[in-house]
Amino acid sequence: MPAIDLSRLRKQANRLADFFFLPDEFMKHLREILEFYVNYTLRTVENVAPGSNLKTYRTPPAVLTQIQNELRLKAEENPHFALELADVLWDEGALETRLLASYLLGRIPPQEERLLPRITAWTQQIRDPEVRAALLTTSLTRMRKETPNQFLALVREYLHPERSRSWSNGVQALIPMIADSSFENLPAIFDIVEPVIEEAPSTLQNDLTDLIVTLYRASPNETIFMLKHVLGTTENQMTSVTLRRISPDFPPPLQKELRDLLRPQPLIRPKPIEPDDFVDETAIIEAKPARTPRKKKMDNSRIIYLHGSDSNSQSGKARQFAEKFPGMVTPDFTGEFEERMAQLKKILGRKKGWTIIGSSLGGLMGTVFTCKHPTQVKKLILLAPALLTEPFGSYLNLEPVSVPTIIIHGTADDVVPLEAAREVAEKLFTNLKYIVVDDGHRLQEAFKELDWEEILKADDGP
Image 1 (cartoon, helix red, strand yellow):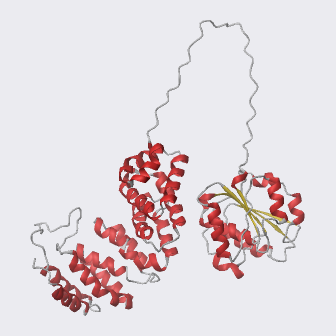
Image 2 (spheres, rainbow, N blue to C red; image 1 turned 90 degrees about the horizontal axis):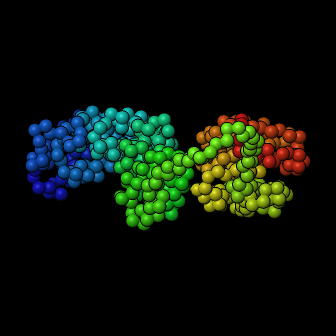
Image 3 (cartoon, helix red, strand yellow; image 1 turned 90 degrees about the vertical axis):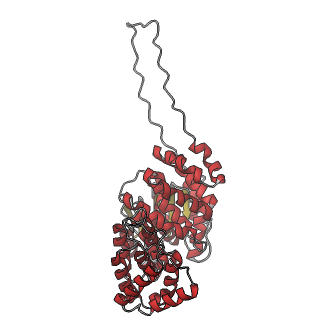
């Protein structure tokens, strides 16, 4: 391999970029460059990349980097041709050409409808770890930054509970987003990865290590809270086993925080019952009366009431709820809808088992939070909720959830029309009970008549 003269390499890469619109000519000149910089000290007879089935030119990374730099603007300005060239590079089947193809996908706008099918198909085809990593990171660069919701929807598909074979893809794709200091929606990330960490398959140990370390660097406190919650509530024995195995690779402060929870628990053997020396076989054994099951006490500290737009924590409903269920949370919310949602997220944190009661605009708040964080909500109760496409359609572009939901709505509601709200609700909630009452928007009469203890019970069906 000749020594790399940067000035000459720039000229070669610049000349190569001139053939961007002519894939066949591009490939001809690309092969010449790759052959020119072959490292013959590393080249083997088989000429195959280690741990891969791909042929390789053994070209130094600096050569590919310079070519990528020359192609960047052309690819961004001409996505159609970039996609065409990427297909040709991929079909060439070499390690270097597939890395270039992966790079070009990352310069294509995420709105390009052919982008995701390429990434999905190529990820399923490839065994080479370097190319696979490039497809899950480099190829998704613009989607991560420009359309994060679309990106997170893709990751959710990868991490679907019934697609465990693709979990590694989902974890690898997420890591660059977590590591990006400008990304602020970490709660959404924790919601997505918590079930995977709890499942803790042994085949995912390396991926889980990278994921947890990256999460800890981005937000130490939230990561510690999430891991402690998982370890403290899971019934899956493999969770602590897998985390114990990978914990030596955690940062020392995180190891210290989890030490007690990861310590192997001693096996407790039941003490054998010693037989009595004397048994009176003539004694009459009185049957003990069956014990009445103890009624599970409701945890009022996990019930929260979200008031409407022109209301506050001292409204009639809020005060009546606080009297009926001492200890429940009845906060004040102020500002625009986004500000109120930010206030709500701070209050709920990452705790689970919430019962949310939302009235009017508070009902919209409860709906949005539940649809985005369904694992945190045990039950949702909406009172004349403002589920209106006008003017709140931008907030209602949500995925349906199966959280048990009860909606109470009045036939005489002149603020939120019953049928309009019901139409939206039936699309968002798959476990929905709709209670229609003869009342207005404030539900003053219905509030007095309804059995709130029964409504708040956790075992309501659809």
